[in-house]
View 1 (cartoon, rainbow, N blue to C red):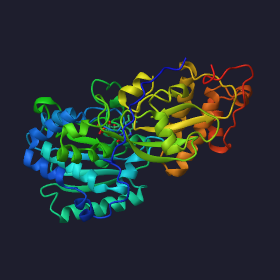
View 2: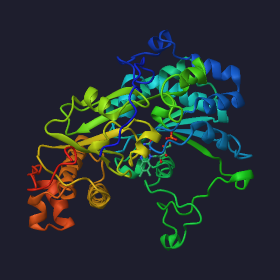
View 3: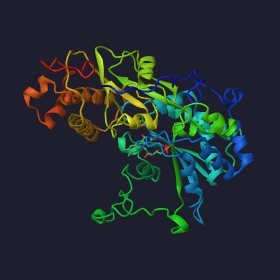
Length: 432
Ligand SMILES: Cc1cc2nc3c(=O)[nH]c(=O)nc-3n(C[C@H](O)[C@H](O)[C@H](O)COP(=O)(O)O)c2cc1C
């Protein structure tokens, strides 16, 4: 019996993050109110800035939803006595199916830079680094233009602005791997104590992250902390400073205030990116952006490969951290890949076959690395995901052939998408 989700959470909102048209100059951004957040931040000073961000309830849009104000306060309370901290904008966007950071960068890179400069003011940073993939050519051009304009306008006085072009590896988006790349090493996550057993085996390998000194509380080490925030997270900051935390909270839910920029891909009529109030039912997002399923019925949605699948019967769940969690899935980067099948009967998506599905996805991701050549890689993954869905949902075509995981992987690369056939005698979850 599908759960009944509360209705009436629909809010019609003015766009806050994703401008309807590309903002092509700093002058244009200023004419639309840009820069007022940074002015307010410089008037307020570090403590009040952090209080504002904490009171707004802003949560990190990189996937984990960590409270941004808490993160900023933690950095501010653990500064190095000798070396200033820095801010790193995570614009590596590696989550399969996610295109929201790139879309924000294309529409308005100034807003992200302004948010990062507010963060730099809050923690006393002397450097802001935009970490992107070298393959994001259009976005790199826009960011470089924006940095030059912001510098010329004197917005960044005392703060160096830099761009790092990283590899197309999925892992690069993980924040410690990102910092490794910023430091000129390979995109491998840092190994934080106490999980160090065996890392000494890597010896003096200069590409290893094992020997990096961690910043610690109470000036335990001279290493300065670095504030890493997702690009969309930082794009929320100017509005919070300019309009105040209450304005920010006037949209969204108590636990997930504000708006969220969602990407919809997979088996929908269209793929796209749009901004919604937090708490909007996912079905509304899917229908508005994607035009509904391409054919048949939505059997599942995946928002973040580390999250469980959201069964199609839960499609009315609110797009919010708590809503997706209550539905048994997760919000991730609000990038929902939809799976629809044109069948009269499918196996229900249960915890047991969801695991199979995710294993197959991770296998493909691990082997081919999403984002390798963006569109191509997404194509491969989506195709692989179709195969994996077929397996998870018990496609007779694959199951009968008794394919091993290795074979599924190879099929994912070379075969055309698998068309699911009805399983005789099974009721679809939507009809049950
Ligand atoms: C495997 C993995 C990949 C990730 N990829 C990204 C990414 O592409 N972009 C991003 O912003 N965060 C990514 N994250 C999350 C970051 O590690 C980090 O939590 C985030 O940048 C923090 O910013 P926020 O607090 O503003 O969300 C990834 C995490 C993991 C574990």
